[in-house]
Length: 63
Image (cartoon, rainbow, N blue to C red; front, side, top):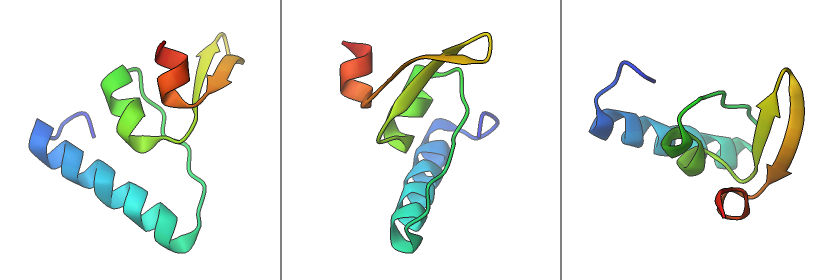
């Protein structure tokens, strides 16, 4: 979604979340952008060298 303008990106993120909830699907969204992770997640995993270092709800992770 990096090539989309901000408004369109936010709309598509909400569409993806809504669709996941409607069908009961779990998804993995990979990003380096913190502001891209929060709207897309229930949990955020912080990884380094292919290993999960921390996995928490987004608010707890960023505190």
